[in-house]
Image (cartoon, rainbow, N blue to C red):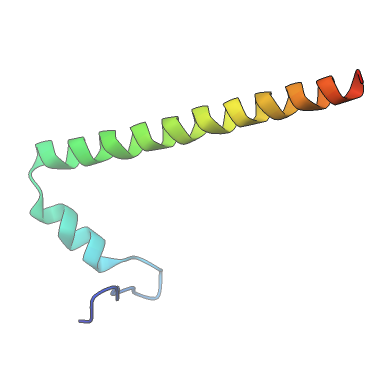
Length: 64
């Protein structure tokens, strides 16, 4: 299989990801899951901060 290619079945399941995670120990899988959760939380925090700063800019511009 070529690099970057995936083996998807008709349901859209990426078998290469399943194989990759099955090669990991349970502890490694938990760590990978924790890393993914932390990344999502960081993105959520950044989104909220940006939204808040945009609201402050709009409020400031309205008061000019």
